[in-house]
Length: 308
Ligand code: CP
Ligand code: NVA
Image 1 (cartoon, rainbow, N blue to C red):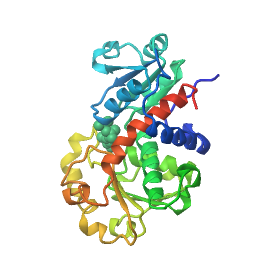
Image 2: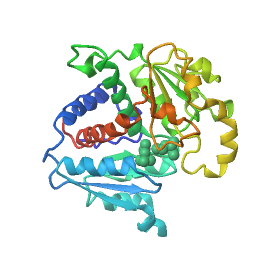
Image 3: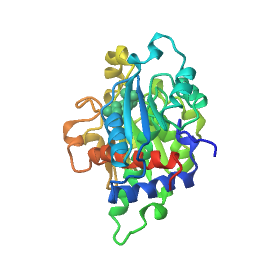
Image 4: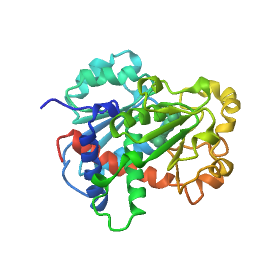
């Protein structure tokens, strides 16, 4: 069997995404298994992390397996060993690898040099596990509003869903653009002209609306993320000025016509891209979102290792 990676959401079909979500529903109900007894996930981190690191590690524990955290500064990568030689070597010890790094091409190279599945745990370009998990959260939240729904995933009508991403056109935003290609929900991106997402041109179905007050009018989901992603810290002062009108605050939400949810992948810079009253308010689902990283990633690991 050819090994499968998740470097991008585009590595998955709609059917595969729905399979992962259905596995997630089961795993969330029954979290502990011995399925992965004796199996090991290696996690390479070249950037900080709270949620991704802990949720992947706990995922392996709850599935009966084990995870190894590797800070890339402690690996021979730091002394010039190539990604490809690292990947070939790690394939001889591990069953699956997760990597978080800067350059997206490094993940592509790792995936092509390993004989085991590779999961992208965030690059400057993409954050696929985040967005897969966020879409699961949206399905879960939108369907619990409807009584008598048992099979949440199969019934979900993506055409009726409007997600508005407000702020910086970053890695999370790019992964939503990819997810839209497959799942066909309505996606509106509201960013300053200079900070349009890199992948916007790759998907003509995605609308760009510069004015956030107009963009959010028909939103079911208002999604935001930091204005200064990891690696962009030197641009922080300029970004604080340019993004000011993109803050998700009470005034912006007054423009939303429907019942809506507010999402943020976290970590948040409270008072910058989102205000305290909104992130702690009744429409915010940010911590349910964070929790679901654990459940969805368990399904991702099992799926990539050939379980359904
Ligand atoms: N959302 C997310 O990936 O968080 P961490 O950076 O804490 O892993
Ligand atoms: N866009 C953010 C996501 C953090 C999880 C970053 O790259 O820093």
